[in-house]
Image 1 (cartoon, rainbow, N blue to C red):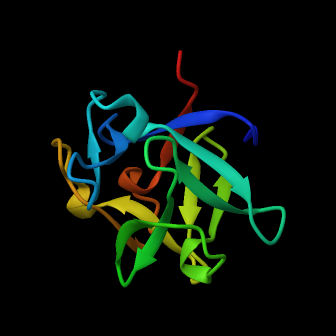
Image 2 (spheres, one colour):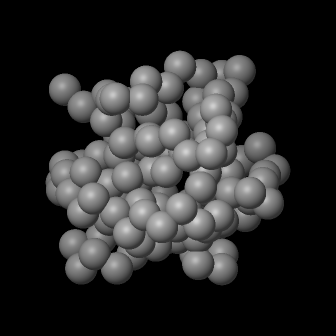
Length: 135
C-alpha cells in the first residue's frame, strides 16, 4: 500500500537499481544508491485516487513524460506529469501514464545509467517497481 506522506526509493525488479535523477539533472536513469536525495521520491495525489505526481526529493520537481522519454519539470498540473500507480499481485508496482504506457528501463538493461522510458505493458520485470522506504 502506498503511503502518501512517505518518501520511497523505486527499484526496478529486473536489476535492483534505483530510479535516479542523473548528476547533471537532465536524465532519469537507473543507478545503484549513491545520490540519495536524487533517488528518493514522494507521491502526491493528483486528480483522482489512483493518480499521483511523483516528486523528487533532491530537486522538488516531478516526473513528466516527454514523448517516450521521462524528464523532470515543475508541477503545472498537466497530464504529462500525472501517473497511475497500480499495486500488482506480486507486491510490486506498475507506474503508467494516461495512455497506460509504463515506466520501464530501456532495453531491459541492468547497468548503471540505463535510461528510463515509456513503453506498452507486456509484463516485463523491467516495468515492475519495488517501493522501498529509506532507512
